[in-house]
Each structure stands twice: as C-alpha cells, then as structure tokens.
Image (cartoon, rainbow, N blue to C red; front, side):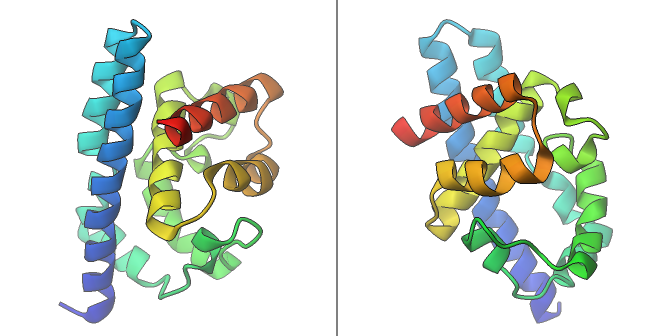
Amino acid sequence: MNDKIKKVLIDTMIHKQLVLQSCWKMGKYFLATGEKTKAIEIIERGWAHDNSKFSINELEALAQINDDQAAMRHAGKQLPDHMKEYLKLHYRNNTHHPEHWEDVSKMPEMDVVEMVCDWYARSVQFGTDLIEFAKIRQENRFHFPPEMFKKILELCEVLVSL
C-alpha cells in the first residue's frame, strides 16, 4: 500500500470516529427535544458516514490531493481547482455534501444535519472554529438560502454548545 493511500485511510478512520461522535451528540440533542426519529437517523448516518471512501476509486482519487490541508484549517482558503476534481467522485456518492446537489435548497433536512456533523468533526480534527468556517467559507461558497443557512448556524451552535 502506498503512503498516500495509507494516509487517506488513517485520516478517514479518524474522521469517521469524530463524525460518529458528533452524530451521537446531535442524536442526544434530538432525543432531548423529543425528536426520536431524527435521533436514530443521525446516529445511523454517523455509522455509515463516508463509507464510500473505502472504494479503491475514491481512495486513489483522494490520495491525489496530497497533503494540502490548508483549505481545511483556514476558513478563507480552498483547494486549488485541479484538486477539487478529485473530490467529485466522493461528492457524487454522498448526499450530505452540498456539491452533490445542483440546487442546495433541495438538500433534505437530514443531509443538512449530517453535513453540519461532518463540518464539526473536521473542526475538531483540525482545531478550527466551526461557526467561523460556516460563515466565512461555506455561506459564500454555497449561497444557502437565508432560512436554510439560519438553520445550519443553529445546528452548528448546538454542536459547539454540547
């Protein structure tokens, strides 16, 4: 196994663990607010999150991104265009990514919840501020409708406060 693929696998395992923890936090929140169905669904999603990264096609594509994690550590930075191409397969396979959708306003609610859990996991992994990341990078990048973005920020606040 080459070093780049090994690095993607290790990163994926760490990330999946952090996503599961954030989905568990969100699940506990939903239970506390009486939303049992949402609680169960987000915990199930935490278990299945990013399983597509274990396919050889995605592994090889993600390994091409190299060590450029500046875009994950700094809200104002993004991956260069040639590296964004490698992520397209992952986005196609995972509906919790806004890039999966032609129109982000069509994202189902639980995809949005999983997306926020995903962002939170990365913020924990890289020691960044989730709210700043959402406001500076993601709002400008995806142009969420105002009501949708308000809900996204509320979910971010829930995770940060728990």
